[in-house]
Amino acid sequence: MLSIRNGLLISLFLNSILIGWVIGYMELLFYISFLANVFLIYYIFFLIKQRSLMGDDLSSVYSEIDRFAENLESLYGLEAFYGDQDLKNVIIHSKQMLEQIYLYQEKHFSDSIEEVEEEAEEESPDPEQDINDEDQS
Image (cartoon, rainbow, N blue to C red; front, side, top):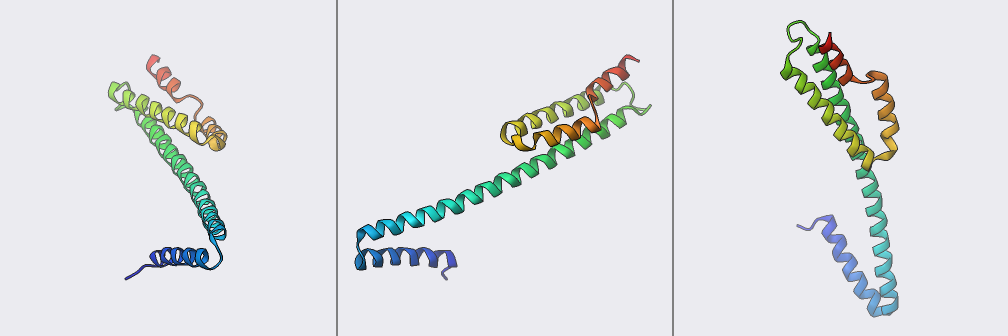
């Protein structure tokens, strides 16, 4: 059973032979060039869409990890866990992960960095400083 894609490929191949035989080989080269340009335009749009989706996914992951870090901080502030070194290390590690993701996002998706910076500054100015302040008191 032939799929539509295979049928189109066979049709393109047969049409190129027919054009070369009937019209001439210069027109065949034009036909091949035209098909290559159409394919490249399609591929460029496909890549742009993929990059946009990846940027959205990365922003989503960043938000989830940020929420996770905030939940850990609130847990760390409870009396039962206050001063727990393991929990403090997990909080610091989550902040380091956020920084790494932020650097990756800045490197590959510079257009959405300003939005993420504004959201992060509004939510928590410096959470690691908050943890250190709690330990000192």
